[in-house]
Length: 145
Length: 145
Image (cartoon, rainbow over all chains, first blue to last red; front, side, top):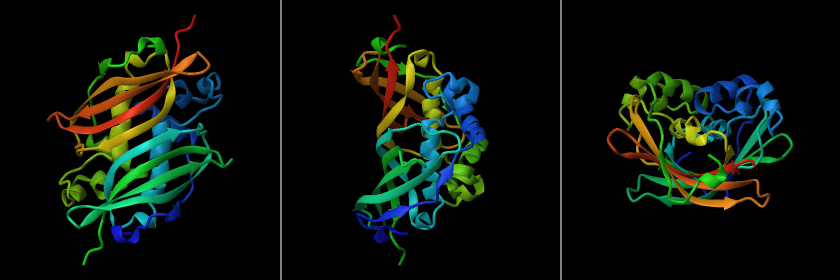
């Protein structure tokens, strides 16, 4: 989709994702080596009582469902920023995460060739608990002539 | 460090990091498969003229320097959120990224056992260009009796 195709209030659901214990540990080892991200046994002894994904892993993986979607083909240039991100519930190995994207703002660039869209990205687990929400700012190209 | 040890205005520098082409590609393949994150050859043909890290990779790796630091030992419970994140320059393979953390707010929890610190996290490359900045909210335990 190109900049012209986005409208405030549009919503999109993306493909659900799930993180395995192996993926959680492989992400955490180099980037977020805390006991509750590294082994089920160590995690059982923490306040979370089980292996949970690094918040950065949940963020990256939830967003990846949008990156890989058809919505995101062609027009997207690159991410610019994130506002108001909150991790609101732990993500356990095997949880099913469903994300929804709502366009909440758009602004044309001075060049006239692109614009910034702001989307509210909300991710829920299989118990309908919100695990993550944030506003993403993305630079999107205008439709070529 | 525990909640009591943090003071508004404190700054900390963490160990510099660098992302290799192999690490950039390994991160991007499952999470952010765009041409400029996947191969040097494909990236040469894009506006970036070279392989660049996914913004989520830069964020996660820059923050990991703090996670692994002595500052972060003992007291840190978990991340709560991120505000005002902006990716301000591309990160190329082999760039040296130096991050600085400044405590800009702190608030005790109602329980009296922990509190939230807000830190401004700023990351520069070897040319002293800011590549990333954000405010991180972290839940930190109070010092045990």
